[in-house]
Length: 425
Image (cartoon, rainbow, N blue to C red):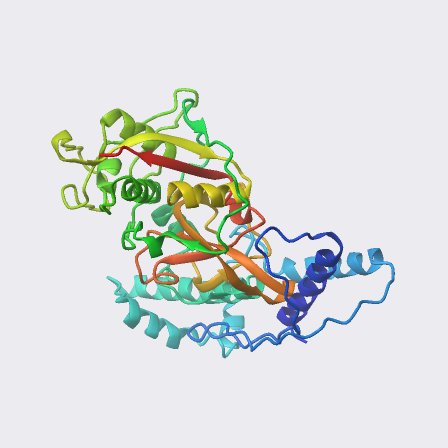
């Protein structure tokens, strides 16, 4: 068995044992049983495909002491995982050239050629081309490891595969997660959760605009903000209007006086609740068509006579996931912050990474729904998931969307959640 296969098997055994002894499924989870699937061959352009699963009784485990076995398995998993730890900060970034050249699955030069054609990539000099090829090779290895540690999703080549992790963070992540919520942000009231639908998606109800593209500007926070207000404005008026992120990039420098360096800063990052505070004070946002997006910092030219949507109030939603779901259903799409560590290589399906920091929030996105059909083979049950609208264009993820396991505050998605209510005008 290969190191990858051994690690997967060890993680599966640990997860299964812990789940049997300690895990209680959250509401809206359907328990299934199935055979452990064999690990599929990974190919960066023919990503992870699960074998057909059939219902089958799981044999009863013999009763014996689990402590020595768990200790041994955990130690083995740590040793196996040590080879993939480092700069990501969780996944190793750089691999020896000889390891790439001997792995036929990676075939980096061929896939780099496909990558350039698919995403229209060109480079100014031969030196830049060679450097990006080197980065691409490292990201192929990284994507393969992401696939190992997030087997329910598909990971592979994306339009970001020629960027180093630090370049990716600087250009496409802009959430200032260290900032505090504004002092006048109310806590969302507790809502009833008994009658929540099994699945819900605001796209099916007309409250979500098409996926947008922030470009190489750390303005994700502005797209999260406008998306939430667009949805609430639709609920209040029945009209879906695309609102201006560029107005926020150019004009919103709202600060929290309780914290130093807590100001929204255009392409250098910001916070959704600061942006809601700005909209309250400014009176509203213009339409996208009246104040179009440029993807770079500019001079503010906000026109109050062209306000298209305004904020009545906004609130901070607690970390209970049933409350998050209830607020989503009642108030419309929610502005949230997440850790985007697994998103650079994400292709599709439900992401349930074994490891993802809950504290290092670095990306603002829009929560638009939830589902229950995401199968997690290592957990032998259906896993519910969140449906998240991203701002990297429709050629990323599942037509611009990200599916993330719910129930665990995975990647910190429960930590920073805000609901906004638009004025009824």
